[in-house]
Every structure is written in structure tokens, then in C-alpha cells.
Length: 232
Image (cartoon, rainbow, N blue to C red; front, top):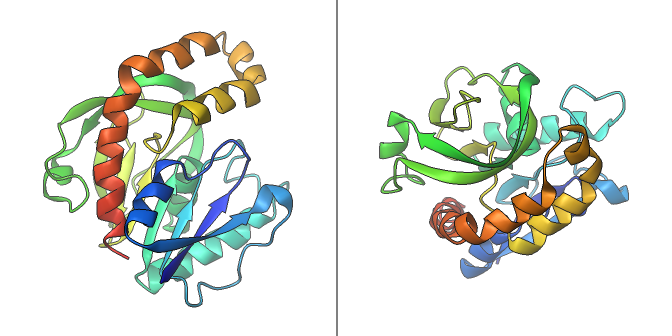
């Protein structure tokens, strides 16, 4: 059975439905919980792929979170070895930085349910072909990144020009969340309650809106993550 590494930065942001897609392909997950103090592996080794999840830290906070430097080195190695890479939210920012792109604070945090529009490049992409051109996704980010040089833009939103990209044939970064479940959303709302109060956002409303948008988002995520697992 093949194995992939999955790096988790905070308890509430798990691989979610990505795990189900991997299990369906009989691919095992070796979890690395850096929030518990577990070290980032120095090399990919026999791991066939790498998943990097979200978290509340910024990629530019290496002094405060030294493990971020270790993650970037691991991402660089995985890309060099042409192994499948999937970065979600913070993970997409780390992938972008590893590829030389700038990651900065956005003008405004994008938290909640907002439309995402697929770029022309998504129509021929192995993960995104056949997916409708616009859908409502779940967002929770304050930082944004430039499209890495040599990467293909896959999606954007009204306030964030680069929401998803592909580098090479196997490395993908998604700033928005398709992996979430109702449980994960509730846990994020509880965990980041202070951030919601600061932004004068209604966590209960965000949770309630999941009934309208989550089923369809999960159906898109199921297809995309299954195709990504097929690259391993």
C-alpha cells in the first residue's frame, strides 16, 4: 500500500474528505501533527505524495514557527521529485512560497461562503475538467499569494486573483476549502471565535449556510480529490 505524508498545523483543520478520497484508492496517510510538536520529516523517503493543510500562522512567521522552514524544504523536495503535492489554504501559501512566489496579507480577510470562478486553464486540467465554471466555496484566509512563475492559474474569486493553481503535472494549491465537513466547520468557528469577533463576522450564520452550500461543494471536492489521488 502506498503512503502519503499529511502535515496538520492545528487540530481543527484536518484532511477531512481528502482522507476519504485517499482511502478509496487504498492510499495510507502518515499524519504529521506539528501542533503537537511532531517534527517535519527531513525527506520524502518512500512517501508517494504530500498534503499540507491549513493553519492560523503566516508563511512569513518562520521565527515564531520554525517548522515552516522545514515544510518548505520538504515541499521543494517533493516537487523536485515530481511527487503529488496538495496544499490547502496555508498549505497552498507554503507551496507558492516554495515555488518563489510572494505571500502577503490580503486587503481584507475572506471568511465564509463566497463564489469561486474557474480560469480557462482549469478546463483542460486533469483535476478540474468538467467542473462547472463557478461555484460557492468555503473560505478562511487573510493572506494571499501571487501566481508562481511557471504555474497554471486554475481559479479566482472577486477579492482574491489566485485561489488555485497547478505547478507541473502533480503539484496543486487550493486557497479555499473543499475538504471540510459540517463538523470541521463548527470546530473552526469555535476555534477561531476571536478572529470572527475581530472581523465582526457571524459564526452561527457561517455554520447555518453550510446546509445550502456544503453538499454541492463536497461533490466537487470528491471528484477533484479522487483525481488528485489518482496521480499518486
